[in-house]
Length: 249
Image (cartoon, rainbow, N blue to C red):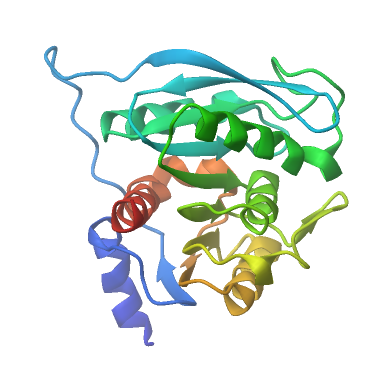
């Protein structure tokens, strides 16, 4: 793929859907500013609270945005908490999804202490609660360590799809290396080329997933996790995720 094509791809990123697996797409673009919402435009706000209990007795607390029987659970990165997902959760709610944010153990409103090797249990508790509440389909989206946890959970439970933003193969003894080959759900793995470990992990994950998967490595950027949903990469990454959800809902 030559550089001139990549330059064109950069300009068109916000118009693209999921690129072929292992595609490198330049993200060094200046996004078109979004117009302010008109007074009549609906703004999705928090619609409720959610609480789950892990298998080892930790209380996990979160927030829900929107309604519907297709849910999207958002798992946060290190060292952030669930508020790092609030803006995108509102976007999902406005698109007709029930979006769920939550704090991993030891973070924000949840109980316990920070035990990163066990955070997949926290995500599993949220999946169980959302399913029990009537969701017919559940997607998992995780940023950084939240993406690693999402892969582990998707290897154990049937989900509609998995999206990771800058997920490493392993982080502080949380590892998905032996789990990803058991993921049968459609998956979308995204990372910046300049974020070297997650970029390598994109290729590792896509080569080992059983289901239909896409690996997107964005060139000329270094953003990590939910930071991909800000700045120059925002519109393109948001579109990639929304298209993936729509294709698999």
